Length: 523
Image (cartoon, rainbow, N blue to C red):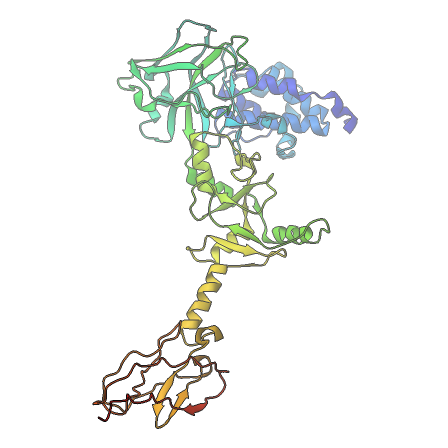
């Protein structure tokens, strides 16, 4: 009887380790998958992953019969000649068929043990860490979303600890020994990379000795072997694809790593390092962006509901906030707004800029809050995405109210300015504006433009030359007054008309100002 209590007796981890370190060939993994009703296609890593997922599923659900069957397949794998008819399975051949309709492999949390990595190359989108099958030390490197492991070339080389002197580690490769190298010419996504680790147990970050130098066929390779300062896991494997000679196939390529000072970080002990060369299949960033877009989203409703909930909190004073539409990494306008599931802010960063940065030096930290932001936890924010779609490219920020409503302050300001220039001006535009026209013995004050459909114009009947009249502090007076009665008279000192305070609703007539004639004007 298989009960939930029975699951306590099913320990999946020994079997998982057996799959990881057994060094089984692809054909063996395919036969195990076929016997348990799993898909048989894919590379070694995918086959291995399917088997591990099924192990954890059977252990979690307490399916003792299926668990023991799969255990037998792993510990006593079928060969091409025996297949399912191996001694262990001879009595179970009839039970293999129902397994084809069994439950599908379940994702996290049942396989969370495989993703217990923290940084660096543990952030793969679907594949987990590749194992060095057949390696004496069983080196396991953390996975990366930027490539999938395809095949290891040669054996893993143990680099002895060196306190003071220099030492060399060497691997020789011939294209004829590895058919996968013949595919590199026609498949640019295949790369040959050098990996190095400071431990040989558990998933490892890429880490080179403090003083290291790589040469391929005696030519020095320029590469950053230290990563970012105080950021373990930020070192990238070294691409040597273009430095190898693959023709003729018999040519011996010598890969040499010269190193020294293998002290641990604490400086109190020495450590060994482990060198390996792998062929990987790289993934372009465009594909990763498509994967993010097609993956998880934070819906607009979820964001708005969270904002409303926060605004109702009596302990929080809710006020309007400014949401930047610029990526903090590139300082350019965001194209694909993403953030991590661990982030508690509404601000986003650009997905492409973030992936480009991680490709150069993987830290997988949010550039806004510094929280963990691995590839598998990146999500698209539909609320910010809608704002980006409904604003101009020149808009770099919006104002967000506590209830989630937003507005583009810059766009609103531009609308107001355009309205003013189209003739609908505010009262402030014509404050203290006085327009004086000559009309017989009276002087008229025009009403401000804010209350007129057309600005008034005044035409002087005098043929004499016009002089500049008084002007408003904001706009020039439309016309000038000639207050002299005759062009032959000597002009006295002109007095500037006083500015009149108007209420803007009516015009007022006042006696025209006439300057006193000079004492000698008629002598």
